[in-house]
Length: 281
Image (tube, rainbow, N blue to C red; front, top):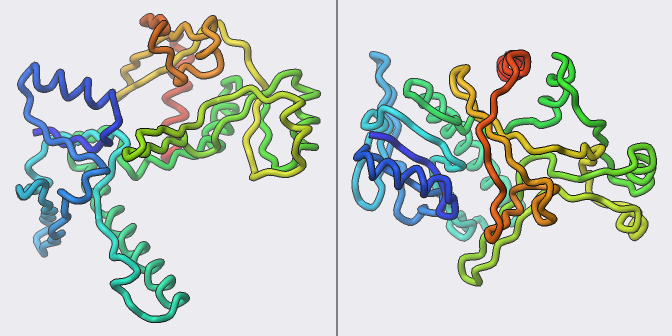
């Protein structure tokens, strides 16, 4: 059986689950929004080296050993935290320190559980979620891939000077794409790549440290998934659509971008694998 850790709003997981149903492969999907119907029961570490991780989902108990494969698609193992009122210390500072300690305990436990995923066929282990884009940029440049000039600053003065030398710049997130979904009001808040103009920078002096890059005018966009040295690249023709020209994730559902299978040069494949190897070195 396949374990899928995802989120309710992920359409990719919906598509995969549809295919799994079609080809009759059993799976269990747990979304990180399912905290009320999910509970980690126990982690048992035996003297003989066996490790048993038990959890319940919708009142059915499972063991990690029930699953041969695990796909972590933006999801995580859920460990509920107590409400601050449950601590009832009567002191805000003490309560804050206790909550911080419990969060650290939770993270150590999660890291141990995720380490056990490596005993399975696991795609995208949560231990690897926190990819440092800046480190990847540095490693890509080191092995011979071209990267755009990149600036991180909190002053408009620096950004304006960077814009002047680069002619056109964009901004994107440093960590991961921001996505907030308000189910009650059915509102989505997200963050995509945007072009930054002189006028926008002139309106402020300081801001939170932000990432800016020299804009590279694209012929098309490449998205590449690879698994065990097998590459699955696709070319996305997003550049001629005003809505998607900066970021194809600003989807145009009325006029979807054309997608075409792509063959990567052997040299690019080799360097891409090198980046992945160096990331875990």
